[in-house]
Structure formats: structure tokens, C-alpha cells
Length: 278
Image (cartoon, rainbow, N blue to C red):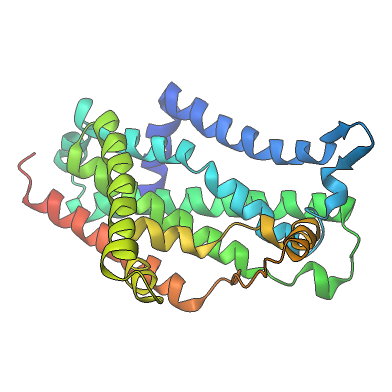
């Protein structure tokens, strides 16, 4: 496994575009810290984002993983380009000629996906820990290390999403078309959600129970938006008579759905590669 991962990392690092995207991703992730310095002044109305509690433990784990997951497209481009380059530069064929099996090839890509997801998760953990210790009103160990399931959800979300991107890269062979297919898939899922919600099951939770199994929707469900958890938003909601009953937890069944899709994407990628004449 070490050999396979080493081969993939050399390919990525020798590609200037991939190298720039990787570095840009982690640099942009670190910009989350700049949120702490944002202040708004509207006459007598003033507020400081850091003072709103977004960096309080344990809320920070939810907030940072949600914001960071929005930026996952940067690494998705790397994953798709990594696969497209195999076809463009003939390295896939050369690897197979040199003795690498198709199973090992797919495994090497999946190991890269795991590495990217792990590196991003560790980075978010360390950054959140530093920001929380700097700005949080609560610094007891029991509070600091509660709600760490958001990091688990973040890791699983990245692995699932990158596996989907890898599958598209193998299916389509061209990075631009693969990313276009990804956007089209997202649009189709939203159209299907609308049809289920307003046409077939306008009442109850039946529609939501069905579309929670869609691949991108299941990944999205791992970490829901955190903003309505803020005390300011809750206060506004209470004043206008809106009761917030949203479930913000990271649930085991949502993780299982994404892991199931990950297995499906990887097995399908292998089957595609196995049947394809290279």
C-alpha cells in the first residue's frame, strides 16, 4: 500500500496544477480563522462574529466542518484531474504494462482519497482547537472534546464525495466533462427531490425518507447547516414565533448510507476499468 500511495503522490506533486490546487485548498481553509476578525458596524448596531459564539466549544466543531466541506470542490478537481491525466498522458497504460494490476490501480486512487480526507480532517481539527482555545468561553476538557462526531461526519463526507469524483473521472475520462456531470447530477437530484416533495408525497416525511438515499443528498445530510443553532438566530426565531426543531446530529444511519455509496463507487470504478480496453 505504501508503494501504491507513493506512486500516486509523485504523480500529483509533479503536476503543477494539482500542486497549486492542493496548496490553495489548505490556504483557503486557514482563512476560516479570519472570520474572527470580521466586525459589522451599522450605526448603533454593532457585532463581532467571534463574539456571537461561532468559535465556542463544542459548536466550533460543527461550524468549521460545515464551512470546510463547502470548499471540498478544490480537492474534487484534483481527484478528477488525477484520473483524467492517467488517460491523457498514458500513465494508466504504462502502470499496467509495468506490472500493476487494475485492482492495485483503483486501490492506489482510493488510498489517495483516504489520504486527502485524513489530511483535511486533521487540519480542521488542529485549526478548530487553536481557534476554540483562543476565543471560546468554555475551555473545560469535557466540553472541548464533545461533539467530535462532526469530524467523523466530515471525514466520511469527504471520502464519499471524492470516491464519487473518482468514479466520474474513470467513467468520463475528461476532467471538464466529469465536473460537468457532477453538476448535472446535483441538479437532477434537486429536481427529483422537488418532484417527490411536491408531486408524489406533499405531506409527511415520505419524500425525505426516500431522497436521503440519494448520493449527494446523503453526503449533505451528514453535516447540516449550523447557523440556526446560534443564540442570536434562535432569539430572532422565538421573537417572530418560529420554533426551531431541526436535528443537527451526525447519525450512524447517515454515515452507513454514505459508506455504502463509497463502496458502490469504488466497486463500479473497478468494474469499469476491468471491462475497458486500455
